[in-house]
Image (cartoon, rainbow, N blue to C red; front, side, top):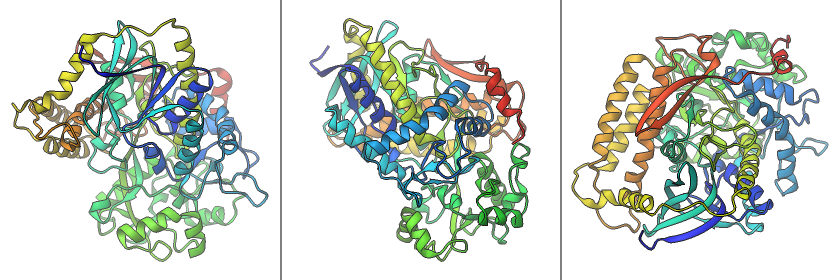
Length: 598
């Protein structure tokens, strides 16, 4: 093995968003020597782009809210495909994690009597999102980052991990490179926590930052971990649609939570035409009834504009296809007619400035043009609910890279509380596992050398493929063939194209050297992107039903059988295999929550 820069830790956390920071804090607090690696700069994680708030049943606005109602909402939003134990843990522990953030210095918006204020979000029966205007993720990262730095955790910024290392069946560390100079680095560790976020950069229209190329999902797959329900991708209903240079940038659900309404080109509030049976009993079915709820918040009924995201995204897609969309291919989101300018600027400052600066639209006077944007993947690494351990010894996962918590569709606000609930548990699980080992696992030098050779392959100069071209064609393929509405023919066509892209990627060539070389970075990202695109597409073929974030026009209804199984994929002898495995059985006392008439 060449003389690579090497660091040794009990626990290595990959990713410095909310889940990664919280995992590193907990691991360090338990006495484990902890290292934190991030692809970008500390404080620049995609978590900062989460706007609306953290979902937690604090009961500050509606005293009748509690963890059981939150659990029920989460399961129903996920169309019952969730790991029930993860959803239960999340609902029970989220309030304490929010209060913990407050103790560490987070500054939440307040009720008149000084408690943490909570806002409405889609799919939540009660207003339960603790927030800081529409910049909640930024405040969360600021708070966690300061606490992590205070603990003296070692942080390695602008470092991309390209492969997890193993000693036999168990994790022994990670291999990566410094983005600035291209030099390789090896991290030896007893345990690794993946907290790498999402993968929606594989779609042409998406809300993700540049880091969201599915690195963690791919790393876990290559290491042999089970991946579940990768076909379940959430298309957030409200991304910007104009101008094209900013298409897909998120428009927070908080706009609708604060009274904004969706309208088509004819000025109609079309969501009343798309209320699914599951939510009909507790959703206003006409505009007059919805306005009564809007004016009297003691009534806990919901406007259909705040249905779960998958329902709203499909409705917008249907309106556009029917010719009732806005001039640029979306619909209108109007809050100007519902709230005065000072309220909008106080509650939604980021949205106000975003539209003024990027679209020359004053949302205190005019409606926004919005449409679905690839936003979040519910599928991911299969983990144990209690410890977040994967099926590979020594490998843990938390946040968006982990599957199970959100089922087939995530409710808004559950992502941020998911990060801190399971980030903490990942830190605990990894530290406890590390303490059970008397020494670092062995390092396989040939494995390290092979990882280095693979990373340098694009410099060989033998191929004629441009990474930017494949990247663009991959995104266009996923957008058009594996997007919000799917069918067998297009999915099979996508699989064929993905195979072509994989062959072409072997011949990618980049010029220059390893210093400051974005073409090389993209060539390496392509490996992850092609892997996760394959996982999504294969899962979408196998799940022959429509459920949550997965919609098949050739199987337009939910199927009772598929509502009881995970689609599990794993790498065997270099080939992806899939199987169906039954969901864990929910205890009787929790089942009763879904039999009650709410």
